[in-house]
Length: 346
Ligand SMILES: C[S@@+](CC[C@H](N)C(=O)[O-])C[C@H]1O[C@@H](n2cnc3c(N)ncnc32)[C@H](O)[C@@H]1O
Image (cartoon, rainbow, N blue to C red; front, side, top):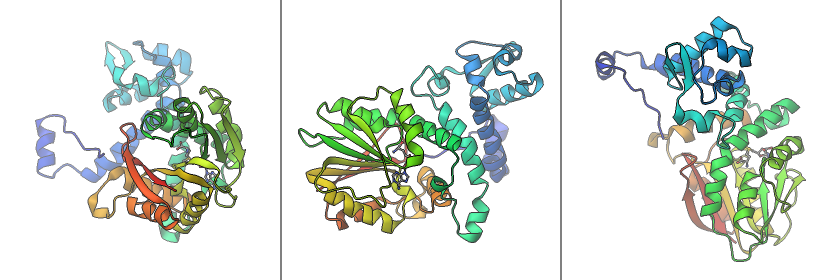
């Protein structure tokens, strides 16, 4: 998936065609102003204040308790960005954004938009990282309130994907045990357990994540069949022939190739014969020339924040096959562009 500049009117169309419009400024100043305005709307409760109604700025600030003139500036910006509409002094959310911006919808991304305020500060360290090669490794430096935002953000990213994945990932008949490495909010485990009634899941999570992650899971129809275990996938033993499925979603981008290969070997031992190792991940295309804005920007972001990055399918497949697993299906999903599940069988 790519984003593209869309001209408004003939003059802009011509300016783009003649390469007169200053594209790097549109891609940066305009993009970061718009991004921050959308995130501020989430942080300040603008979208909840509007709900599905049309409201004046005076009515909005009754809920947000923000400055009237500054709030009007933000609302006007969100109209220009296309998230809100405006008529006769009243602002409303465009209906196509209800499911993303209103908390009454399970698909809302408010937690992720708020977490992005933290990610924004991390991205501000990009030049230092490129100069020195020293990443942030945030998992080992976050404060408790940042853990809370992080886990909530991960919930928002996964809520639709977990349902789609559970429908598409076929487990061995009678599958009874799965391990969800870095399973956080638990949604992938919860949806898979709903779909497969004999299945129970253990979520292996870093100790800093457990309280916030399990509190989110408790609100998401958590079943008795999903349990948390504090630990570290890189250092813990995973056992021998224990699981029908070992799943790792959005975690291998935090680990180096050597760590991922060592993990795949532990996973291969911990799977029952016929058991599945499923890696869910943003895919980096094989060469930069192939493009892919999601995989490439995610790759840079993860290399800054975690010392690792996104991986190509070939790289991830090599960990699975060199660990003795037979690589099987690659599953693409509609709900998370640029993301795939790579399965392999013991
Ligand atoms: C990007 S989140 C992904 C959460 C969830 N799997 C998802 O896809 O929404 C990465 C998770 O992996 C956990 N994690 C990172 N390193 C880990 C490790 N060494 N062992 C276990 N969990 C780890 C983090 O605490 C975090 O919750």
